[in-house]
Image (cartoon, rainbow, N blue to C red; front, top):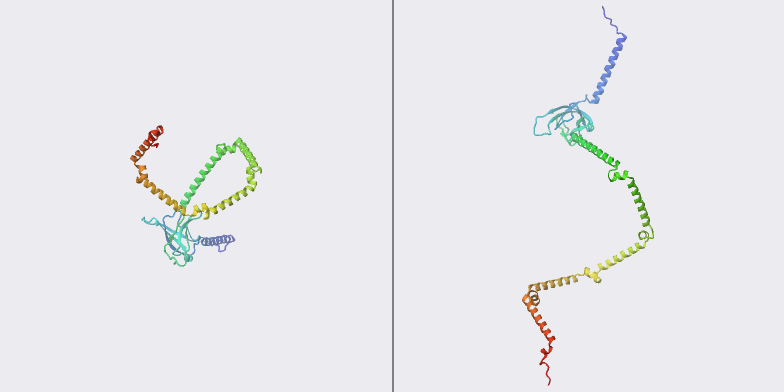
Length: 325
């Protein structure tokens, strides 16, 4: 049987739908490629990291925070003493941005938010450094250790939980009337005593403000101020007089003659004391010679005995002294 060569209306509708779907798919792929930057020409750069926690092949590479490429490969290097180069990362960067990537550019591991996906961000270079070419190495800059940040954040959360628990215990004790603060909050008697204390304080303040009392006069009467001002003026005048060279007090403060004389007197007294202590001379011997002291003591004793005998019988000593012619 010969097959019909005519296209029916239903077949045209199916073909139109298929063509529309292909057109939509083509546009979607094109827009997706533009959004993901899949159709731009790229070149490869290399960097070395100690770890690639959170990175994956196909992950984002940005320049100054803007999408600029993707991660092509992540390879382990043979173990050696340099632990900062454990992984070799190959990135692909859009060629039209190559002027931004220079020898002073730095690549850093960053995160989309605190807990988001990790990506590599390249800082723009400066014109005085050369542009990096295909296969050149990107220098790694200082990156934030997100694990340490999360650990610190978890510690802070623990501290907040502990603080909340402590505050809950404190407020519970206050509500139960425990401690001085709890008594202040719950004890009616303490409130009444505080009220009475405030009343007495107000009465005391009223008495202090009484203009007829001592404190009231100190607060209200300017005479005390005038007396204090006069006293301060007198003290100032006295200080001025003492600071001058006139008068005894001023000369005692400023004239060095008296000081020199006192130094001389002190020196002479020191010499006299040394001479007395040395035992030379009459005075020195009186101080240090025990035999001389004993003789003087005996002579004074004998003299006292003679004087006592004279008082008892003076004619004994005056006999023959008086003659009559």
